[in-house]
Length: 333
Image (cartoon, rainbow, N blue to C red; front, side, top):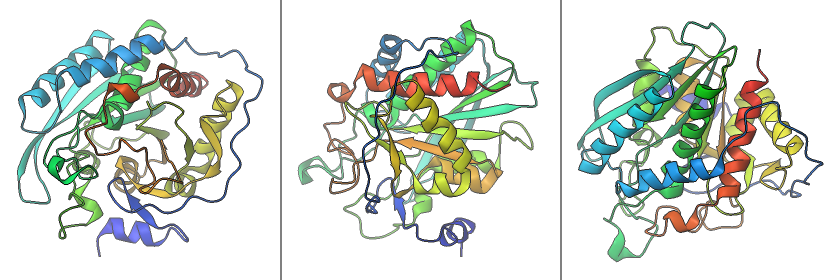
């Protein structure tokens, strides 16, 4: 039994979902109520800037490992983080996919105030899916743009990095763009379905952190955070392993007037990068991820299809997520 399997089985009542697997129905819920907006103590998140960062990634083409678009985007991402004043680490590794393909992967890491003991970890995956396995059969082997699934979380974090570069803070922040998250077994293949074929970059980093013995107070994962009218339920593994951080984030969102996005109800459990950071580094982490309990797979209709394009990206959703995360990290002392 793998260590991750052990972790999964102790989540009483939680059926682990793959980002690319079956959905556990969310608990019955009452949509969050928008509360009176309070002024943020954090820098102002620029939604147009975040949108432009998403669009720039998509313009490279699908960021599938071993592709020209992937290599070009990696160089650009590292350059942007460096431009904002972060210390840069590009962690290169050759990882083995479910089909034994060797993937030339790069985890891109930007550290702000690297000497500070108190640290917050922010992360997203930057690669895009090599398959459209929830699309029509003729599209199965077409890679996706990954505007929402991949680029949206990275776009938000790039704007957060830009704001940190402009507005100093008293703690350390590490931003990691994990690679090879989305190269797991496609739905149309009937073997090698293990959850550990997903999130290859975060699995590698968890065993080989960029700083020996790396620790952070907590981590926040952003995954699919750009869709119009997105709903962010409290992901089950996040609640189980980092309930105080979930409450901190969801409370900040409601106080900022974003309650209609951050739903005050529990959702299903998702196999995502946060699980491997929790298991490998012992860092309590949460996953802010768009869940749709009434949809066939639990995610938006564009998920893992050719329709995951910029047409789905909404500036207001990016703003809700980005401003909330800025509020949380700038409240730390």
